[in-house]
Length: 470
Image (cartoon, rainbow, N blue to C red; front, side):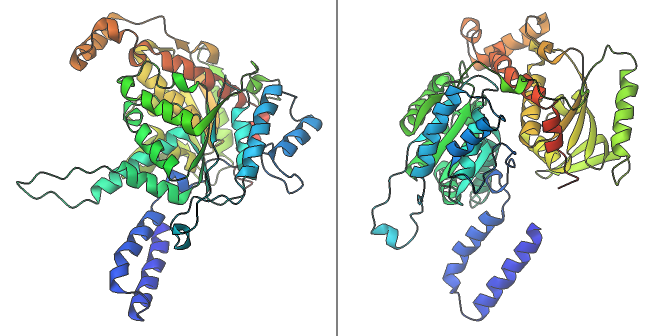
């Protein structure tokens, strides 16, 4: 598709140049814009289709009216904390009418720009409805320059843009020092041209590479009039808690608080665990008799309806190949080792979401402290699958609530930790509280993972993930 678009653009430029509709001097800047436009980015993709609950209706004037209707119809229960947040978002939706951060036009230089409304940072425990209220608000905002993305996917996109800009620099001449180049401001400029409203789901910071650039990135976005609404399980002051070099991250929190009002949505109820009709048995334990044969039959029954044969599949991800041993049509039958014990991550999981609507994950072990890396991948995997309404069938060593076991860690793990602390020049007393070694961030995030996996077993979620009817 992209190749076809590029060919049409090239023909159009050739025609305009031949007929003197474009001057030679304007071509480089136009080509640069076109390249940016044709480049695939998270911001150009639809991350999640509106659910039946959050999708807008012409019969409602805004998100609050829609929310009230769902309560009257019995689809939602009255929740005063949700309502309080919804009222704030309703006002913001009205304030955003007619708003634009476009400062590129000739007349914008002479007309005073409208001040952007302050954004919102919504935090609270898992399953309390943060994503639902944000999505309902987002769907009623009347502008095309809006993007709703998972924060992890957004940061992946930012790093790709940084890499692209650095690659486009002229090569350093032999014997000469390379000029210092800061790509953050140009990346923020690109993003601000694509969106005046950014809605982030699951705003969390666990990666030091993200932590070190957030202040400069968001400062530039805010100064360019981008409005941010975000959901998170953590209050702003707890972001990147006990992270490496957190002292360099802390100034970002002040920037976030300056441009976003903090709202707490925490009624203490996990609505994902409500009594909803189940889609059937989707979580199996390895201790069950003949469990592998049971899953084999379930996969074969699903595969029978596919217009394909069961075979290995190779997916292209950022110029490399991700191979899965067993798949048929839109169904993949994977092991935990395949998905979480290899050096793969969110980009790979996103590509899988584009290809498959159902994924079997077998042989999920107990996730102890010495499997922290695999646990992080598993959390990212489930977040990504949930975000894209991909269905899962699981085979695990223990029930979901008991998968994370942080009490056990062996001497070998202690030795590796001590070696890493020595390499980083960090004392063992100081290192004992760092999240990278304690697993605190993973334990916190896994509460969300279990909550999401619970919802992913419901009939409502399973039906929403059916792609053959779309």
